[in-house]
Image (cartoon, rainbow, N blue to C red; front, side, top):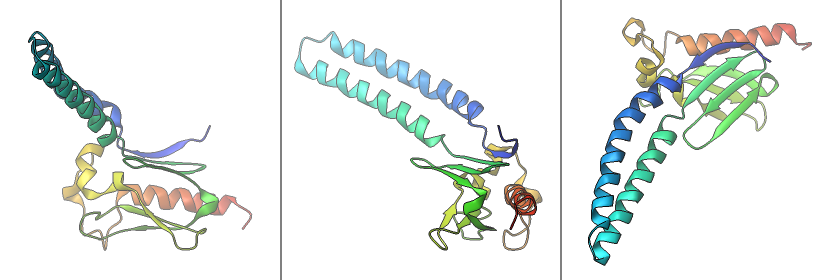
Length: 167
């Protein structure tokens, strides 16, 4: 088992907090659907089905919306995006960069060897997600000049792997 060097976004407490808020709203919605079922009409059944669909969509949004993660360990990088996962071993990493683009400022960008130059941005490491990671973004400078903790951890782990490899 590889030792984890850095983990962005421990999603347990985020899902727990959102689960409490959304769970209460879902219970209210299910109660409204049960009340609609007491009506002796097609409209009552359709209303209950709509309530159930809203509850299922709310649960799906919470689960998918809180899926972002970024993990650095001795074997490579793990990037979980909303609908896609990437497990990148260090052998496939060409270089690790940090973006200064507006929406993804401060995010780790992994440049792959194969296919040559393919870039994958770790959405969990953006400056916008710093509060969820428990980091104080007010201490940081511009992402063009100062590396974020996630970028430093990924670069250090990659350098350790390069020093230990036979390249």
